[in-house]
Length: 323
Image 1 (cartoon, rainbow, N blue to C red):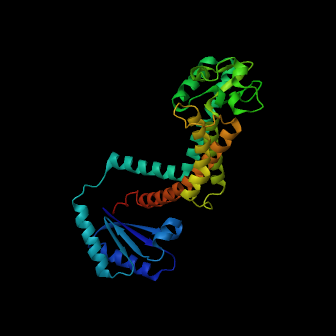
Image 2 (cartoon, helix red, strand yellow; image 1 turned 30 degrees about the vertical axis):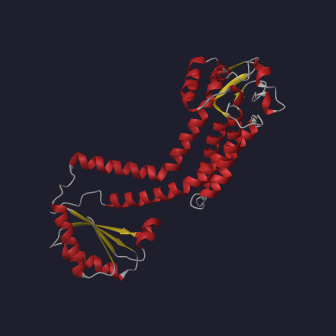
Image 3 (cartoon, rainbow, N blue to C red; image 1 turned 90 degrees about the vertical axis):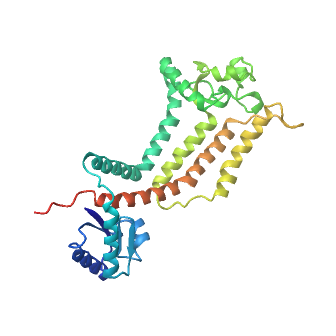
């Protein structure tokens, strides 16, 4: 049976008239009527509150004010349109309803899902040194291997757990920490050795993500938790602010370091190595501002999805059979 959705609101005389007209047209154009109060959802309220009653059926939408004749023409047109389409029945209908419910569930809990994914992604690299310390080398090295395609894992740009220092930067960084070369006896320019080094009981064991990546995804997790607390009150960050405050500091820090390490560096370029704290600060800022930029738009999109799903599910149960 053809579905007709009637959007209404409280104390609406035009809605009462549309309901009566639909009841009268039931004999001419049989339909399954689904009524939705736009006050039940902020998205529906913003979309329809000033134009209720609103009729949706098939590809047609009719907004107030409209006459009985207007409504009849729309229903007959929708009936003709539906006549060429086979209704979804049986298992196919059950699957469609199930998928709609799943989409609705994700749209309600998307933030918890994303925060959980980011937490697992940034947490597993810390499990690797914990496992190494506990003597479970095989699962620890599996984590290092899994993360190796997405991170350089250079030991002199990574955090260490259970060692004498939290980090062992190259001497070029100019920190007060014991340098990577002094601590390991390795050539600080040997990238392969720095990547392969996992650590030992004296150095501690390397986290499977570098300092900057830990900061980026840690910032995204922190931003996601803050967004959960302030949901609905955070407006999207302007793109220029994201570029200037979020991207530029990290690009300058990482870019100048990169140029200093390649043969095509400009003449007179000062060779530099970023510090653990500077990598962390710029990465954390980038991660936080990514959330500030994207999550308000995601919330708006998910609100639209929730509204669409609620409308679909309002008519998901078949109409009662006639006696």
